[in-house]
Image 1 (cartoon, rainbow, N blue to C red):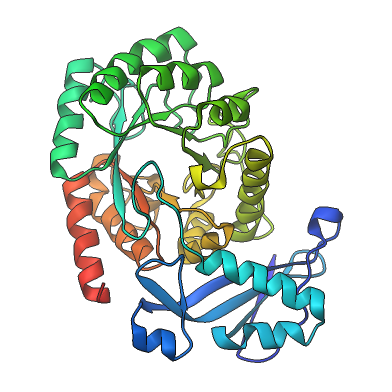
Image 2 (tube, rainbow, N blue to C red):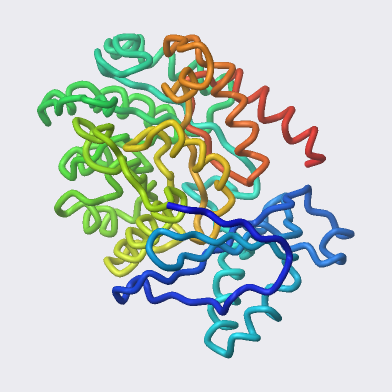
Length: 376
């Protein structure tokens, strides 16, 4: 893959024949992101997902022959004019993409997407990469969960199957045994609980136990999963993963990771909506660490604002991931909190709305200070 960067001049017409077997496609990534004010909007900035940010420029990312990627940076106010020079179809595509970037996001699971929210991780597993065994007993898991709520978590993500690289599946009965008592208790206490599972039958049981959100690392690809979520009217987070947990780190490859993942998530959104899930009930997670090299992960981080072009809230889970240690001193998982909160703060500057984390108070502090610095 080769990437060519250009600056502030006319770009070729918008094209999109990738879904018809071609290789030509155009994506938009907001840059020059600042706090949204009346003055900057009057100066031609555009609101980012109608939240507290606005952007002045766009990186127009275009695929060409083979694996060639061209990125042209232009002022946001010039987009439609430049696209229109390529004809009505080109302008229409540009307008549609710009609308997805700027239009308001509806509340997700009752939470306003004009603000950020922390999702606390409760892994009831003995073998998760970071906290395996910490919450294997239900009472310990519940105590940690309650503390996370006190520390500011608005969602608790309860999972019973490790999806670390190389992980084996657990039986459905064991997954039920691990998560259902915790979900049932927390839901009974009024907590917004997310069920972290990729298995349709576990999703059904979790929703019956009181979970409000389905968080699926497989993007609702399991048989019957999309239909179940549609019938339940539950919000769902669609995450990208290349391969399966047992094999996902076996030489992951992309033409250009950010746009490949964007297209995959767009296809999953389209499938979900066609199956009856309202778009307002969907959020996306680009899947940091799931079938990606450290370089792929950092390409995703550098291009998080791109994913607002999907028209739904963006979720990010970087907490304690091995990529953090790769670029540092190979620290063990529980010593990666500084890198985790640094990446979360940088992601908030690109408008990410939901952060899935192990370290709730530290993340709350980092995000509050990031917004103060940004003038939000």
